[in-house]
Structure formats: C-alpha cells, structure tokens
Length: 300
Image (cartoon, rainbow, N blue to C red):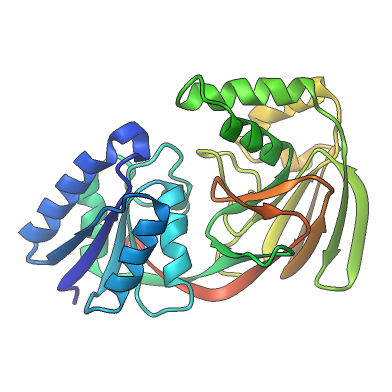
C-alpha cells in the first residue's frame, strides 16, 4: 500500500505545461489519502541532489511529472534500487509513457495507475563512456545522424520548440554522409561498416513515437540495434515515415542485431540517450536486466 510519495517536476516539460499537470497529480494523490513531498530543482544538478536526499527518507515511490529527460534524471538515482518509479507524463515525446501504456494526457489517471500499486521489474540501458562517464537510460541510445541533429539543436538559439529540431534536421540532411562505425557485440562479433546512424533500443521508440527499434523488449536483457546504411538524402527522406510504423527494418538499407553489450565507436560522434547528451564515442552500451521497478497499468 502506497502512503507517501516524492513528486519530482520539471517545470519546463511540455512547453511549460508540467506544473499544471503536477498540481492535478498532487491533488489526486491527496484525495486518495497519499502524502506528497514535492521537488522542483533550480536545474538538473540541483534536482538530482534533492532526489538523492528524498530517497534517503521514508518514501514509497519517486513520481516524475514531465518528459523523458527528467525521467532519465530519476533513473540515475533509482537504478538498482527497490524504490519504484511512477510517471505522470507531461513532456513532448513521452516515449517512456508510450512503452509502458501510461495515460499521456490525464494526470489523474496516471496517478491512479501508481496508487493501484502494480509494478513491473524492467531492464535499463547503461552507457559507460571512455571519458569516465556512467549513464543509465530507459528508451533508446542514438549515434550518428540523430546525434548530429541533436548536437546542432543544442548549438541553436532560434527557433524555439519543435521547430528548432526540424530546422536542425534539414540542415544535417544537406550534410548527410556515411560515417565510419566499429561495433563489437558481446565482446565477440566485430562489425566495421559505414552507417547513417546506429540506435540501441531498450524500448521500441524515441523522438515521440518513432519506432526505431520495433522489436525491442524491455525485459529480455538485450538491446536491439538498428543500423541505417544509406547515404542518400532521397532514400533517407523516404525511409523517415516508415520509422513511425516500424517497417523500416524490412528495407535493404537497414539491418538489425541484438546483443547484451555493444562497444561502439565513430570518430567525432556523440552518444545521446532518452534525448539528452551522454558522452563522445567510443562507449560501451549495455542492457542491465531488472534494474528498475516501475508502476504499470493493470493488464486486465
């Protein structure tokens, strides 16, 4: 029985809609007789400090109100611990919520899922960078074209919102080129090839519903690897809509693999996960079985 929860809110999630979602969520918890301790950090580092402090206290769950970025922050604190994660989706992508069939536009319904108390133990991805960084992720790690787009987005100051990403994608499309990659799967099989991108999925989607790794299973102890080999702008543009259906994996320029641990390198390329910058390559990307407990809807 849940009696006390800690609620972490990212006030910038969902173009600033998260605080309103948090108010509704807190009111619903209180109506159900559940005590709430709220956390809003000044920035990511401060929020992490507050989370770590909260987990030292008596709390039955850490509930995140926001999108995939703030969920990733919570994962750094929760990975390998017994305290479950609750999600009240209030972001723009909401790929974690999509994976676990959580209500994405109804904070009260999301709270009801948490209050019902049904949990699932799931895998997390982990990235160990050659720079010494160590990062957990829940959905997909991206390298190549996707990470180049994210690099450009992070350098831009205008326009704002989703349009910034669209502009960055068009700009990188004009610079499209095949990139040299070296991957080693489970320490045994080496793949040396040229790729547009390589994505490593603990779950199926990223970028707000793009099924880049449509066969990924968050409980199989493996990462699904999707590799796109086309350096043609025309072919990549034609491929793009198929990613939302997951049918791109049947195209000739796409190959897939599955592994527990992958060492990946591509000179000058950064790794991103759950939409955020992680580290420069090379890096070791792994699936860690049973690393997270998460509240999920009833299967009925």
